[in-house]
Amino acid sequence: MIFQFKSQLTPKERQPYTTIYLIRHCNPDYSLEGLVGSENMPLSVAGLKQRKSLTKKLLTLEIDRVYSSELKRSKETAALFAKQLGKRIIVDARFNEIDWLEWHRVKFFHIAEKNRHKHLKGYQKMDKQLDEIQITARLALTDIFKKNRGKTVAVFSHGNLIKAVLTGILDADIIGFLSLEVFQSSISKLVIDKDGVVKINFINSVDHLKEAPQEDLFVTLKD
Image 1: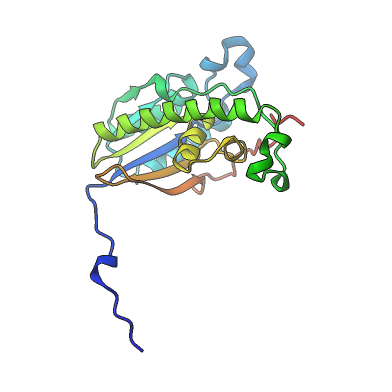
Image 2: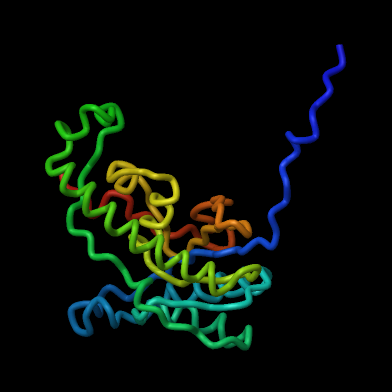
C-alpha cells in the first residue's frame, strides 16, 4: 500500500527567522572577587584563552548585533569579538547575573511532580521565585526579538540568566533549573520565527574550546 500525505502536513516556513545566541562569559579570575567584587571580576588567564577560541567561532556565525550584561566578565568576553566584528556592544542590565542563593542536591528518583514539595525544602517558594525570574528573562528576550527581527544576535550573559531563559522556554520548574548546568564560554542557540515561536536549536556547545571547560556541577549544592 502506498500512503499519500496531504499537503497540509508540510510545515509552512515562517520567515524571517531571528537567531539569538546565548553566550556565557569566559572564566573570570575568582581570586580577585574579594578585592574588586563579583561584578568587577576580570577574565582569568584561562578565560582570555577561552575568549580567543570563542571569538574565532563566533566570527563564523554572521552576527548582526552584540549585547552584553553590565558585569565586567561578560563585557570582556564580548569585547574582542565586537572589536573584530566592528560592532559596538549594547550593554543591557537585564542580562546581568541572577543571584540565586538556594542551591540544592536534587535526586532524580525523588522528583515526581506530586512529591517534589516533600523532597525539596521550600519548593513552592523557590518555584514561585523562579516563575518571576523566568518572566523577567522572557520579557527581555521578547524585546530583543522585536528589535532584531530577521537578524542574528549574540547575547553575552551569565549561567543563571541563561538557565532562566532556557527553562522558561521549556516551562520547567525549579527542579529543571537546578538540574541544568551552563558551562563558561558555552553557546546556546535559539531560533524564533516571524510569529515569535521559539525553538531551542542547541544548548551548551563548547566544541570551539581547545580544552574542556571546568565543570563546577556540584560545587555550590547543599545536602
